[in-house]
Amino acid sequence: MELGKIIAVNLKELRRERNLTLGQLSKMSGISKAMLSDIEKGDSNPTINTIWKIAGGLNVPYTKLIDGIEKETTVVRRSEATMQTGETDGYRVYCYFRSTPVRNFELFYVELDGCCANTSIGHTDKAQEYVYIISGELVIHTEIMDYTLHEGEAFVFDSSISHTYINQQEMQVTFMVVNYYPH
Image 1 (cartoon, one colour):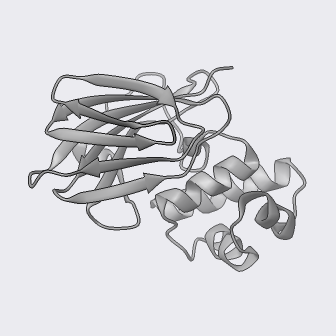
Image 2 (cartoon, helix red, strand yellow):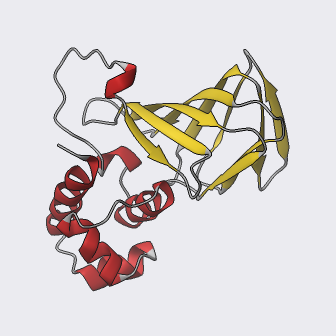
């Protein structure tokens, strides 16, 4: 099933579980009622930040909106990983593992083109983000300060605050991200 349809089904189910109208969810998430309606109908392919805002409004992990059915044992091939882009095509995120009732984290492979940046709105309360640099150099800008990471280095931070991934180099940077949601 294509990602837009999966998001549509999950959003409708989550909203109904909470007995929320589109108007109520709009106020909670900061996403317009019309946009939410289009997403629920499967007529929209929302950006990563739009999904984060909706997840924040519903107080659920990001991947709860993009979750498909998963078997107990899963192999995810690169060609099967769900790809999304940020506000620009220079930032690509491949979701390998989503949070589930028995898994409280998400695993992403990320590519950020040279001289590009992507800002991520804050995630849910108490969420932590673990970043491991596969290749290149990445600057992570948070409200506290900027952190520069190189190949083979890792970083963890409170991802409930807004943060920006910045690639100041010409070559692409690749990294893994684990979003962890403590119980």
